Image 1 (cartoon, chains in turn cyan, yellow):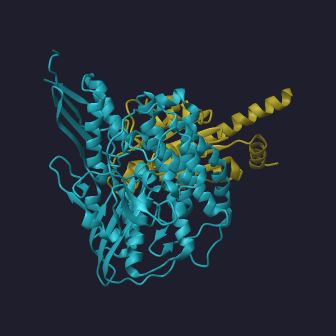
Image 2 (spheres, rainbow over the protein chains, first blue to last red):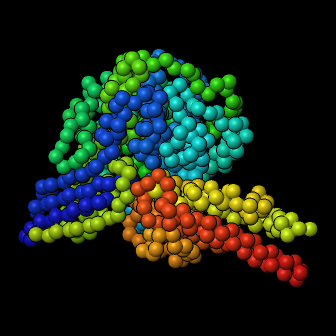
Image 3 (cartoon, rainbow over the protein chains, first blue to last red):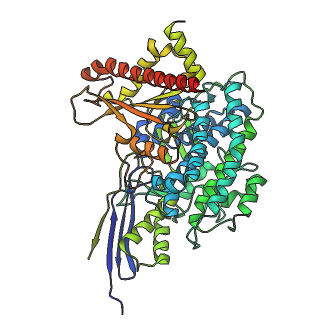
Length: 432
Length: 182
């Protein structure tokens, strides 16, 4: 009989995730007795900051919630107000918002794949160590990331906390020459983006299927970004206004972030969930590469998220170039807006998954109450469920270091965007 | 031909490109990189150089964006606030290998200047010359630079101007001697 081992692993600050989080794991023999992902999130504070603010200030305030995905926060906010105010900003604005979102997907996904996730999968401590052996891959990744940043800069004047977005459209329309320059770079990036998907699919990813529900927006004709209904792999298909009827956030003792559950159960949002639910909305070029990846889509292996992320980069590069091909400068880059009182709700697809906003607005157009449900709070329960499953599949008969590494790898594969604090790994392991 | 005109001709002929980035944030003395960029853009010495010789940019975080736009550059000059335990306003000039080492598992937010420069070196996208300039800072709570840091900005600007001109004249010497040999 093997000796019973009790393990306590605490990772007080997780590295290579966006912000601050911690992990606590305790086992007794072969049983996991405690498994907690503790996260600390800024959006709660932002919801109070937004109160009494004019609707027109909201896009710039919410952009500060995240340095990696500011566009997503701006997109959910402007769509919410426009739905309430009854404004249709027209096809130019709609198209350019899609290009802007493509930029954010490309930069965020490229950052995650190359600097945060791939070192795990290739067995390196960090991206620099990995780059010593895979310089070409990292260079390609950083070039894609730069392209994404420049797409954001085209509309937002800067890539971090961009300022170009307003309710009704944009403050400024890019010139034809600036767009033409980026269009050439987008076309040049197409082969790189395709190669990236094949590279990701060829990684030696841990096997193992899990049962989980995927949730994402679905649009009648498009791969989802700014519009669509809330759908799930379990048959949910509702308007975004009905979110609160089906999804509930709850407080848990070990985390300052709220847990969001669908009918009381964990669920997945993000690239893998989007691909799983919207395969037929992808253009043939992307579907072909996914078909040739050797992975059966929809996939139930959470580690396939990195392939899904790469496929979305490929999609976003194709989509942005499709839209910018025949670019023209509009007469006005926005539609004037008249505020009205009511409840403004919208959901868009942030790089990490569905991002739901609700603003209660008074007759002056000021925010009375705000509610923001970010993707990471939605994925939190799913990450814990995955950790439990993955550790059981991996086996607890590994060293503390191996178990810790596997846990971190699982967490990082979700690309959690936890907060905007800067911290380094400070690991403490206790054995009984 | 005036000296300035001669320098202009040489820069264009040799294709010298120098990339200057000022790193900063809105917090007190951490604005230094941005303030320096403003001053360098007004510098009479630097504006005399041909337009394509010099790019001067502000950056709000030392992320991988720092590695953008370096293709074909001969030199990268980074200007950043320094906390080295010296007197506030002390001028520091560091070559790339003295910026510090990047260790541990890096987060994207924790991707500091040392890590970015190391990553750039490893993937071969840094120019041959990399120099970091900085001033020792005192206070990161205000909305402007503190008096000792503000007082040292002219010295910092002069040092960067000298660095640029030296790079231009070294390159012109190399170019002249190789042209002479051939």
